[in-house]
Length: 437
Image (cartoon, rainbow, N blue to C red; front, side):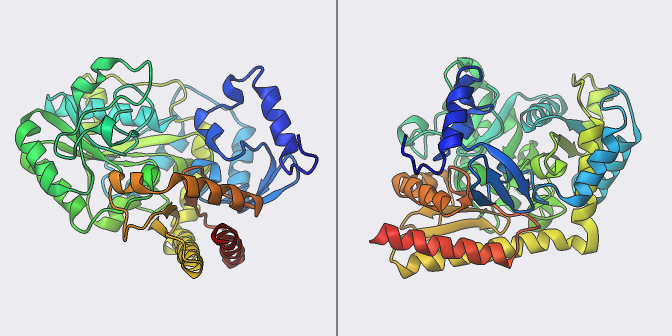
């Protein structure tokens, strides 16, 4: 190992971890980083690894840290709750307080239910949709991620050969060990293409219980919907008697206090939330129309969980939601403004050196692409991006103290400031100069 290896301790800890922890990581996605780092401390928008290197953190724990690390109000709320029972397995007032807050903030939320992970929340809303409509099929979009379980880890990743021609999409299994007949319950469509979607609905519409989508496809390049696309989904689902589900695990309480549905003015029947909801605590939720949600109590729809409504997580959620809602959503407005400034700065710096870089998404969730396309609007556009150049860029940015997700995503928090913007853009300029040399 080189003596000047700035990641020497992280590398040593990873080797140690591999002897007891599968692959040395708790989530295999984390092994995809240029260097799987071990951290020892973090404050606000910055984190410090075990080698003493400081980073501006744009991974933010893969999205939950909308208030940054160790936000004072969050720390206070968790500390206060930590001296009380950590789990009841029964009802307590925080459940009411957080659900009331969500109902007041989120357009579709007439009822709320809590769970521990986004994957669980997705399974719950799909079951509700099938029960409510009496239909079995779910329509999802290629490149959209809705969790790692067999029923939805379909056509999320893969090349054109696996996915099939655009007018003849195949439902593609994304993991070994998946039950092959999972594909029998799902129909796949290209995202941002209402014309092709309508043709698919003409063929299968009478069998489809729900259409599920990320309103912004954050998991595949932060793809924004074309004007009218989400509105078209709302119209078509009503026309064919299917429910519309927004997977707002990422966009919820990050894009706006009311989620992407409040930004685009399209209210789904059901929606899932997570990540930013808990501010860093393990918490997800789903919400929607009362008549659908109440089927879990009155309609025989099975659902449960020992850790649902965990007091520590809900204490964190209440503090987070109160901070985000304060001063007419000033915190999220700031996060999105800082993120947009970073996106603009990176794109301008790349242009200075003649590099084909496009930054997509909305301020608080953006993604860097090395592509000559004028815009990236679909998963197939995302596939065109030069992954080798992106990998080189991410590794060089890491050496400059900029910590991003391994797919080029950058999450921006409410505590990133102009100082972080300037430092990030300057780092990108330095990196692009090296890449162009």
